[in-house]
Length: 314
Image: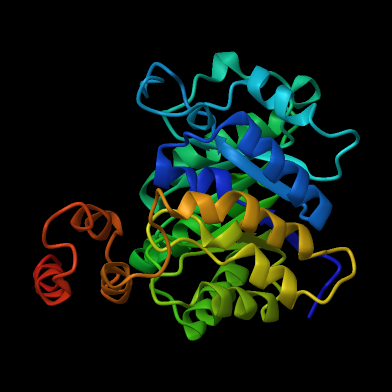
């Protein structure tokens, strides 16, 4: 299935960077950049545009900050790339004085993550980048926990005040089923005419099927990551999504090369993807941080104990 309006955004380095504190080598990211470009992927999200004054560069890798010089070195590894670079910015974590206009920048898109309660600040940050000439998205986080009238009010405000090119539905906790995708997309469209995007997590092994459902509902911007690498249970996999989109512009073979060359060795060092603790937090609509932390303890495989503890949290 393919609609001409569909855009594929690979978020491996940004979301996957939450697994290893964004400590990828430049050579690793350059090779992935080359392979994603060869595969026909539209956007590569390379990390966060955070201020070093908030996060310690000694604790985090360079893709937590995405310095312009670093991104220029990345772009120089390809001649005339078709793929565009994206970064994510969080409210209150970026030094806007250091941001250049899009015409002088190595990245083309800025994605703003915001919860419903902070939608005012999210809109202001989107508009700042939009006025600088960037493509922009507003990613409303944890919608599975914010489905009351406050969400309707936020969507109305986005429609009236926000210059984002794309409005994202984000299943932060991997809690959604296909009927939730239907309900949320219908709800978004009752309040806004903006192009929609979807970002899912794989806690219940539904990231791919929910992305398909989003496509059926004519959601145009689709997030994925190679081998599903992302925080906790990870995301819809790039390889599954490209295999599903029957369009000759996409070629799955470079993604398979990326898995062989880059991600199989990485899996020997880091854990991500579907595991029982992530399933439990997804089913209970809870933040994945507790599932991540329990994997560092002696009780990491005591799934019943973890389930009972999570049941008592909400």
